[in-house]
Image (tube, rainbow, N blue to C red; front, side, top):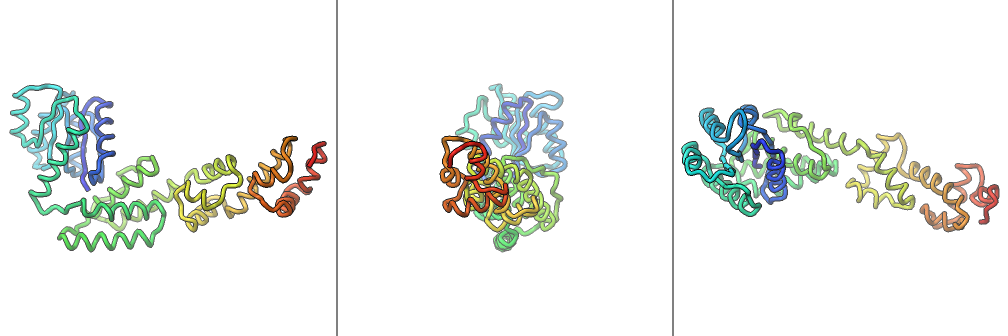
Length: 327
């Protein structure tokens, strides 16, 4: 998975490049941002990145000084400079620092994607680095297993990833962790919530996988009850299968997660919501009892009446009669 660092003092520009990268078909494991060269160097000294995309004019440390510092520290990311200045001296200096490409702003999506494809192609040709495009299907499979909270599926995909890495001669923990970051990125996009990268430790893939699994579990279960209640209040007749589809859970994991979160079986909780909704609907004169039963998910009126009586001590018809309403 490729790790990319975007360096620019303009937030709008950084977010624009970030959005282009996320929508691309590159196999990206991580995208980080820095507001200037100083912050970028702090990031690079603590983590390894494959590509640095940087502006020229920035406070504290500009893009060219950043390029110089990167090379002085014996770091070897590909560097792409994006600048609003069509200045030959800038370009000439950039070439001295081994910059891969120099693009003038404003940058089109087509131009940026084209340049990055060329940069990635050259990096893969220059060394024994694994062709991560070959791994993208497995990374997606790992992300799906994490999303489904299926630990057995996670381990099956991990075994397959390790086999593929061994075939290519790349089996160290660092590469495994990069692949894990790629899966985490995909899950993060699915949840529409950022996963903090600092939860991971270098060179301990199994521990990192367990940390990620638990993190995704906690994030997905957080707010589960609120989401379920929202759907049930909107449509009390909704089935468990439809809820699982909407929330992205397997049936077995949904049942287990819901029981752990609430201490109740889903069917019992749904019955409570249905009876609450039925009680309100029965107070509407224009609704018949059979219409209310159907609206909250019961096609058998006798069954509906029996459950309602267990909750409120009277049948729906008696409930209506007490309020001077017909059946």
